[in-house]
Image 1 (cartoon, one colour):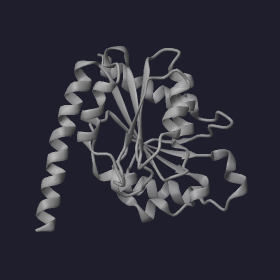
Image 2 (cartoon, rainbow, N blue to C red; image 1 turned 90 degrees about the vertical axis):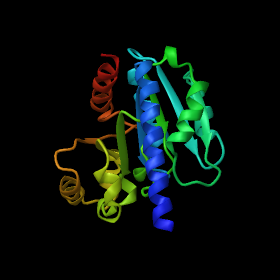
Image 3 (cartoon, rainbow, N blue to C red; image 1 turned 120 degrees about the vertical axis):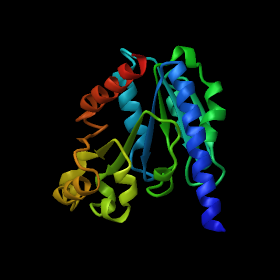
Image 4 (cartoon, one colour; image 1 turned 120 degrees about the horizontal axis):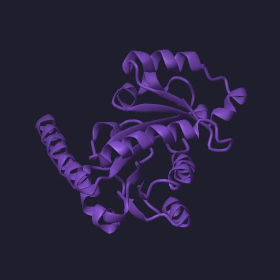
Length: 218
């Protein structure tokens, strides 16, 4: 019975995800699902990307948290349209939550929306939210075993960001191991080496996002 109910929930989420895609398509908006562990640097990465993208594109943000609104206040302080999405204990964001919260953003005045998903390497990977692009973040301090431990997160993503790359000299992090495991579960998918502190790799990732924004507008 539990398995049957789970399948029903997943199927229903997929249906709502498609409805979200239709809404975003009608407004020519690219939505990006940013996933990663707590402390992986999701907010810092989004902030750095905003700095690059806002020169050419209109950016909005949906900040997902179990509770609180610290990150949303930070992003809003940059003058970016931002809404807070609290899950009240749920370990992921579902498409229905995005569907309900989209009207709170000025959709006619946006080109791209970042969704900062709940800090988790398990649940967010299973739920599509109507996104155009999925970005998974793995920070250097987290360790090099995460692709092996949480393969779905790294399989069902469009690109992997090795974040806090400037900290490589300070941690025993086997980059070759991560790259080999990533290539095994997601052959040919791009990987970016990024540091929000030094700016390394930010422009390259912003260029990829720009391609997806242009695609949404075509």
